[in-house]
Length: 414
Image (cartoon, rainbow, N blue to C red):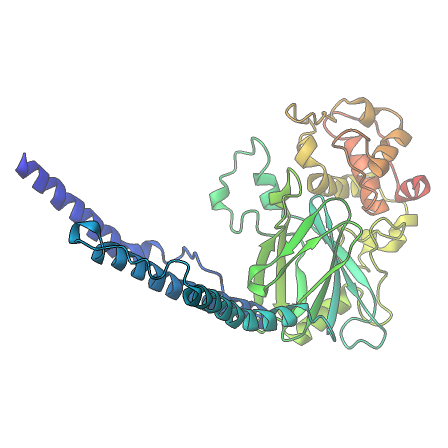
């Protein structure tokens, strides 16, 4: 029996030694702590976090050290007698009240300094209005004619990238572990210049969302009817990823955020290409009749331009754009094959009354949603996107109605 116990003991010791020897390699890519980030705010937050952490560690060592020392040295088996001289001692009451107050005040000073910096959104170089939608983000760069970077407003929607979106569908059969940045990539990134102060104005179109990119520091809620502010100043170029940090609905996990920090000259070229230069393109305003650039490459982008509202698009153009817009905005509920989902009550569109019935009713449903159901209004999409989606739904999956809906039809129905 003793020999067996020795064997078990040796095995246990060997196992523990192996675990601790392999631990550094195993945890090389597994960080539990905050990340320092690439902005002054994120670094201040990290340093404050570490300062408070070590203060707490020191307090724990002192308190638990005294406690365990007392329990051992003054236990009953050693004949220790209770010392009652400290019971109701005014001197001790004052001492153990003052010491925590001093510690709290000492920690509050650097914390207050960091909070003041976090709230100081004055004098930004770039201002971006960010609006949360279920489940995507809309970015609008706010320009001024005398602004050195952005002279004209322009904007775009940022959705989860097509590869991740296809892989996440029920029964896709895709091995998501083979997808780089699965659920952490988008179709259009937020571009900002390096070493410039970027102010973010946050709001929401529907429910609570939260904009959070850990390496840039800070996190703020996007609340319908309110505008919150935050700012960051990235000091290193690169790509930084985050996501909505609020449980905003069934697709909450599918609205990532990707911010790309570029040198100033590259940022200026990107702004000009997207209509933000002086005399540039038309702002993409969600819900407006001129909002035709939602999924196009820029303000001057062919069928995505404001002129597309009043132009006729061919069936091929509408079907191509409609498929892309459908997969981005509608497939989560109605599935890429239009068969819907029984669980959750998401009806099929293939052969449905809405997709094969009167066109006016179909347009009205996308613009207004269906009260009492999960079908929300998609009026914030551009007229061109809504027209393309409806045309696609009426001519895909065997719904061969031959109906064509133009952006002007949607514009007239708004």
